[in-house]
Length: 221
Image (cartoon, rainbow, N blue to C red):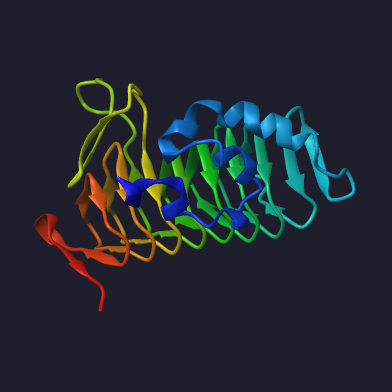
């Protein structure tokens, strides 16, 4: 289970949630307190650097937010990040610097590291996206099982019963997700891995891997 720990998936120097995430072993353990963490961090941010257009919303002065975007509280949007036309940030979203939240993308209860892109028609819920990860157009995180039971993390090392109903995907640093892919509840993708377009992914994809069709996973050369 070492490969799905926070320390193996993420470089915590690329998020202002580093202190918060350091409290946990596995990334899904951090999902419950994201909203409270954002409020606590937001209150420490410099008013010289961040605007607060509504209660518990902080937007860096260099960020570009299109007028048609919806920003729900609590939320932090970092330096030089672009939130495009009709983006729907429902709340409990910590978005790092130099990110792209694209047209009609929807975010809810997420930690988005620096330099992450969700640029076209993405849904990201109850998820953590590592540094420089990228979700291709139309790719989504599915965060609730069809039978509404708690999510179980499945890997070669066994199963972890989380006791949590809503868990999306945990993408390590530098992960590439192909267009129109679905990441099923509890999917974990290790650092530097790629997902083929139109994939339906579940379980754990090891770091430095390529996820192909029919659950075929190969090591990057």
